[in-house]
Image 1 (tube, helix red, strand yellow):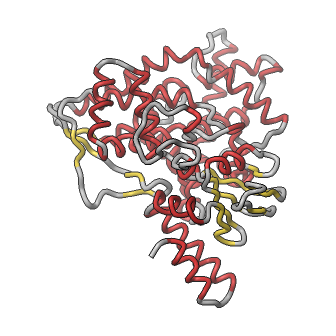
Image 2 (cartoon, one colour):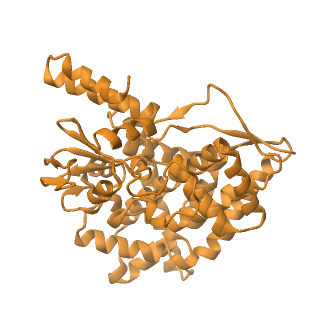
Image 3 (cartoon, one colour):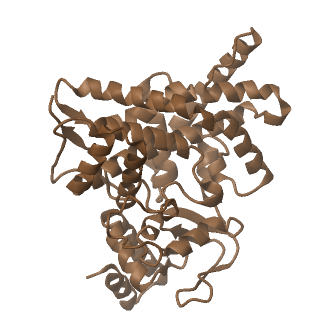
Length: 425
């Protein structure tokens, strides 16, 4: 029985409307965990814009997903505000299109500078090489560990935030990420871990900011790190962020960097190991140092196993999505809207032969890093680290995935949380 048949059967049984909605929401979330692609394929063809419950709508067609995430005045990011405020303070991800957002994002772009790209390529390659070198004697590489440690070490060196130690920094980032993006049921155990992580991370960053300011006062030059630039820019009223504002932007950026990059690396390899011909093409591109071809393969691989499957928004003003079509749906304020970017990237109306692996697709076919106002601030950093990390693994000879029927999975994309590979030592 498909999702819609089960979904309709719940309503057909009758009973308390609240109980019906709860059961239907549970079914939807279970399918989202177990088989997101199958779920979205069915919805796109039969009910592309579905009111799963009176308070939750999912949109699945490419044009409708873009419509939702580009209408900031109707579909707000304010659903992130309570958690972000509790953990770190306002972050640009949780800001709608306001003057504060414009000011914050402009200052952040001066700290995350695009002309750092050559330096980031060198750093990302070095960090990936170090992790591969550690694995060479054994001929086995824990890819899940590498995918987490590479961005964690980049945060330490480029952001200038090493944490008290590497495991603590990684724990902070993961605990906060899980609460903000995955704890949709507000599990108190996850919330409590994130709260502790937020408190500890705030205290650590407060001390770092104070130390940097004291260093500048003594005449020391500003380090070319993100935190160093932000603290140094406090000297200019036009680029001044208060200490707590610097802290909150850094926590949000770090949290979004570590887990998202790790999931993108694992998603890329999940696809490549499922498609041996594409794995061989990626290995050939890596060996030839053909970054353009390799990146095109990575983008397409991520389409099959993206680092996130939905982009949530909160409806704050009544709006009709897909107005004038047979799938039009009017969404009322207070409704959680799930813009299914994973589904959009398989929409046959927008993409040519979406079930085929085609690395030459136009960039507009991909919604890996969001869209419009809230497109990922650190996208270019993620691209560099993703490419360099994937490349170093592809260069290993005799590369094979260690398969197990018990490989653990994680919600929102059915990605592996662990993956190991073997190679010729």
